[in-house]
Amino acid sequence: MTRSICVAGAGSIGCFVGGMLRVGGHPVSLLARPRVIDDINRNGLKVTSFEGIEHRLTPAEIALSEDPAIFNDADIILVTVKSDDTAAVADQIAQHARQDAIIISLQNGIGNVPVLRETLPEHDVLAGMVPFNVLSMGEGHFHRATSGDILLETDDAETAKSLSQPELRFRAVDDIEGVQWGKLLVNLNNALNALSGLPLRDQLAQRSWRVLFADQMREALTVIKAEGIAPVSTTPLPASVTPFILKLPDALFTRIAASMVKIDPKARSSMWEDLQRGRRTEIGHLQGVIVTLAKRHGLPSPLSERIVALIRKAEEAGKGSPGLSAEQVRSG
Image 1 (cartoon, rainbow, N blue to C red):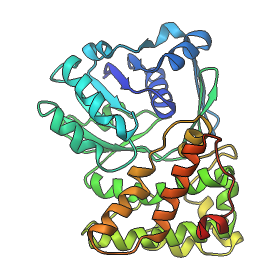
Image 2: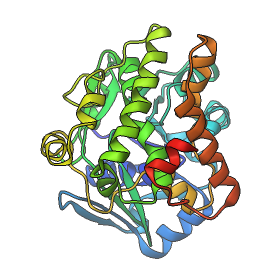
Image 3: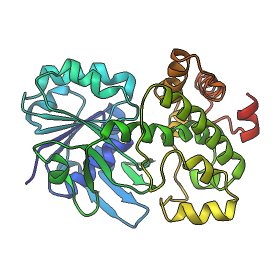
Image 4: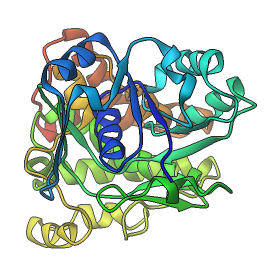
């Protein structure tokens, strides 16, 4: 069954997912910034992936607008804005969307769904988790650079099943909150990748960066446990085991990691892209969450605090990634 889908805040993830859903036969519209709209109007929308997927859509095949009235006809609205913009887009949805429209958050962080539900009490609001990374290659081209299925909160309408297709799989899960916390742990590397300036695969190939990532995860796991949260790993390994795996020698880690996740040589974190383009990052919704919880429970979080400060400094400088070493990040 085809569903009319609108992507609210079509950046890299939104354009890729929206494009793939259009390829799968769903009518798709994108609420996007003028820059994105102009880019797609000039070049069309191209979606590719490291597995060899390649599709091109003409501007006529996908509706584009910067007016939230585009929500009017949507059966499903995919929210892909940055976490700081969630409240604003929720107000727009409340004003323009049909009451039977299903709202799905495909955002980073763990606080977006409560914001959406508070503003949209008459809508079905589902939490989701996107495990893969998408690069904006320019000229309307969006490239998926890592592997994984999109996970959605289980609902009676079987929304995940209705959206899933061979080249873009959606899976329903029961403990979506645990999954989101598991993804937050993995996303702690976003800032490290942004500070390094390295391609993701090159960064993770260096044990010094992995040890820093592992120590940060241990710090976060201690804080999350104090909050009474049980994270659900987004990889085949339990979250508690991942720091140990990260600290393995390079050759052994590479062999184990290759069996769990596929990474394109071009892949970088979305936070790296934010710094390169002079945009604000979501550091407050990643390491910033760990710092907040640590203070609540009287626990130390020196690594998270240091990384927040370094990302804020890079944002203020406006010169892209500072290209730091793992040792420089650790020492501040």
